[in-house]
Length: 283
Image (cartoon, rainbow, N blue to C red; front, side, top):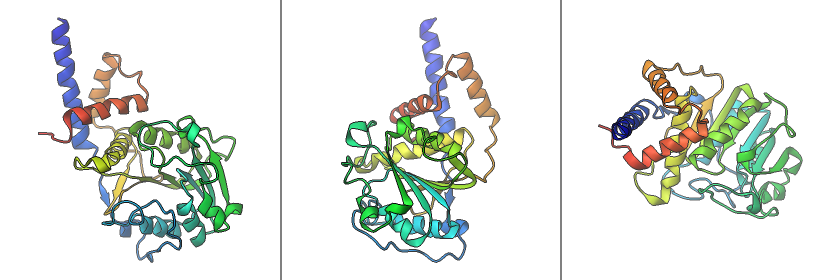
């Protein structure tokens, strides 16, 4: 009896992954659809800029689309998870009057597996300070897994957000859930390092972010992928995605199996196990 139950659950798990993979991959969105006729904005500062092509692969450009969207949407308040040296913020401040809140963990606060940098307090944000933008930037030092922004900014104020901290699947989902109460009704959220590694271990972190955005689509958030970039994007004014009958049935089976008590981050860890077990080879 127990053996049959384990087999049934294994079959269900496989079917759950196949449904997930086939139905929640990220649609591709062109920059021109988001910002028609917008002038492309090049960065003014490239030192310590940790975005392609200034860091990592040279075959695509992630900083120009970001700056172009910031210029186009002209946010009043921007929130960044993952300050690094502060070069992204410096470039954003140079092309706008935005007020920035930026978050970064100090070495003793770091958690998660896939983190790009471990910087001292003096190193975090050094570029935007050097360029003279400190008066418009609030630096917050904390581990985003335990992120509570209620002491730093009011609800519903953030017009533009960048999630580029720890790239573990559950961290990306948690970052989004934690910042969501502070987003305005017209907010744009950009997720960096979103893609598929195609089994290249150098870029396996892309799988984690992509899986996180797929999971956010599963629970109703219409995350898209910006064409020819490593950016995922969500617009707050987009309607919640309706739940399909199959997804509802899977949730029903989860509930009967006692799995519905999982948080989204715990459930996402299970999908990461599915990814490692089954990969993207779905018949």
